[in-house]
Length: 210
Length: 210
Image (cartoon, rainbow over the protein chains, first blue to last red):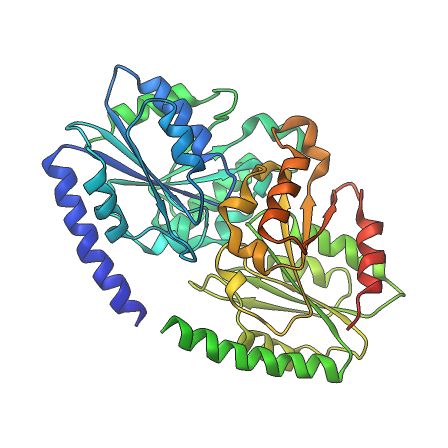
């Protein structure tokens, strides 16, 4: 049953991948626990990319239009997907969102998944790069306790570094744990709130091949 | 299909409920995002309850024995359940854990669910009280964005209040949002790390009817 659902999703993800290839769209799937700072990261990223690359956003949440409203204020095309009781985005939802979203050629498309460190990891969306975001307030043991997410990710952002003085969090240990689960993971430290590390992330983004 | 799974779970949860009634065990289901401080809260709670009520713990995580090891150090009976790719505990897992865990009469049983603000809310375990924990670092909009969890909970702990000076978090607003989703929710503020609010939580716990 699980294999059936995942098999059907993989087919649709493959179709999305073809769609992105045709338009030279770089699609990133941002995944994390609730409240790790995904939307703040997007706001900062959109501002930093202004004039350099067109951007579009798909926002996933169980309920509310809050995140889409925040992105809309930046002038960026955005579609909100509400999953109701659903715990993750799937490739079919992305396809439907693409029908509403006029993604320009050569865009970067950010897909902000439902806040959940477990379920989204199993559902490919057709993205080029999967980014897992953890914040320093969540503790340094998360890569070991939620390994599937870190196994499936290409990139890991460690966010909220401005809070490091106030929490028990060992930066070297979390990196060691993350790399023990996935030695290919590209790890970046950041405070989306203060802007620290954002420029390095932008340079990395602009160098990514579609 | 979803109804089938939930229906089967509800039957097993009902059986667990009978088991707890027979032994006068007060069972609480603790649910939250990863890294909200559930295990630290448990460590503090166990110490505070020492000599007042017997305690037992069931720990849920995708992987590792880390949390069970932390609880084991307090001398409390504990069983770790690893869910693998699974995103929540279910009533059958609790039943199996109870077979390994010798729960004394009149105990308080804490069930720490997998860190996930979405999926665990739909699966009753036979508990008397469902407690959702959010931390102030997660942002004040979580009750609106993840309403199912707050609808199904009886109690809400707002944790990590020691970090309030360093984050953008409106305590009155989060309470307003949580109560708009569930007007019956009992809300408590706490810093499990500093111990602020722990005594109020212990008094409340000891007053709970089995």
